[in-house]
Image 1 (tube, rainbow, N blue to C red):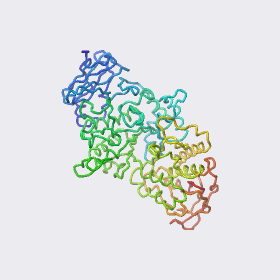
Image 2: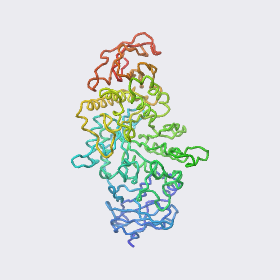
Image 3: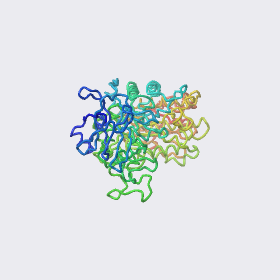
Image 4: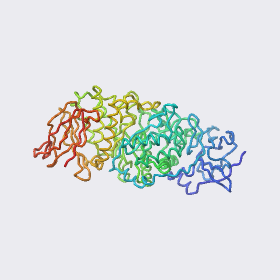
Length: 635
């Protein structure tokens, strides 16, 4: 048997924290770490396998022979196996061969804490370290301001594998190539943030990254870990934040993954009613187990610390919160109070958010949560879950349903487009038009719009204008900004060739200027989560299908009026209420010719008269372009 030298990175305090579920930097201890012991270079390995009776490191350095390098089990009942293997270093491939006390079952597992993984379909872990030198000091100093809830927050959601492909060589673009093309594009389009669909290592392309096996390794599909850091660095150097999709809800049953890790239900809940996800055919973490909670919270902090991420969008929170999620009667067990809420998940999410904001007060956590579960984005000291924001799924569903209707019928459904304001300030909402809305036969966003080609693009501009003037932060999936015709296909690049055609190029120009309007108009973001930042002018003009409202910032002189004409009919001399004796000036018009519109608008400043209307003391008459959103500065 080859020599494994006794060695440990764990202190007694580390072990106590790990057992109690309070160790939030486990990546500093577990996994493979290149070290020098007694003057000899090698690698320290540590893995949690409490049901094992033997654990070997197998790899390219010992011809994958079990027993050549057996780790030592710690004496403190922590279930940790560890040891130092001389002459193993950066680039070596390895796995853990685990013999279980449970019927002598043997498993061969990738390292849960590996910093780099083999390119799928290969599944080994790789000993790795890097000494990347960050150049984003300026961003890191000011990102608290850029990530604040009263800052503009316009997010471009990206699937790296299909944003743009290297056509000539029929391959993915690398992290390095994306650091040029993607960064330059996002900057030119004036987005404030990018959100990446999961970039942690995953084995199966059709999962889009939502079935993870390498929680601490950026996927090797696009390059090395330090090359991903370079991409993040370039985004920051161009004043663009980065949000990472993070998946603590479930994991696949792949043989090399976390499932049945040491011959027992180690990471997954042993009760299939809590440990198996019927929709995704995957395993669910055991949130009742302290060590698993430490693993997940450590993983969240890892991406914030090691990769300078500015936020985490937490996937599938609703599936975590409810014991009966996608289950029939008899397939789930109520909690101790007889309810359907998963109490261990609630405490886990609170602990996660408390630790994230304690360690990184200048980032955001964003919940993808589709139910009416209360106080998701309220602080834990008030009884909330502690997220910074929550996706506004109700707004998304109602809005897309409304805009898919022929304008002739919209007057019968006006409440659908205004209802969101009844609950818009119960959470810190982000308005999402995400990847989930452009797959599985739902059609592209443009493809849902009714009418002829001109009307479809006008409706699309109106939809986006309504979205950006509605309270809340914004998220758009890639391709939507230029009117992608086809549904998203993860295997293919976006249809960039569409930009050769004027309607698509004009739509891209529109979205670029819409982002600029949003970023340069404090009233559209400063009070985006407060009822103080919004006031209806009129929501009940069903017959004309017009809605109008005031958006307010910290300074009254920054307030703006927004008017949406939801039909193709031009409305001249349309009267709206104005709160003060003032003049209003049109500063944005989705019907402008440069956006592909008809060019109808209000080129001259308009004086409000002492003529009460819409419950306001003053009023003004304006021209409403067809299928348009217009924005007016109050002077």
